[in-house]
Length: 84
Image (tube, rainbow, N blue to C red; front, top):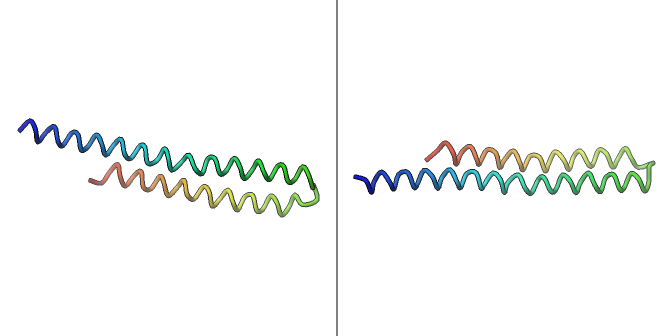
């Protein structure tokens, strides 16, 4: 009886650890990507100010796509945490 309870607690604990680790790694990539996107956009606008409009719109498009990856990671986190 104790072995079964310990096995259930171990499984639940590993699921919690895995879900937290999955979301941490899923948020790391988009965070770095967003930093690179806006850093390069600022650099491009500083070099050629007349291209600020197109560069800004492309930067926000890239931001939206990178942020979508973070949201997908959050959905995976919720699924791992509350199922199983």
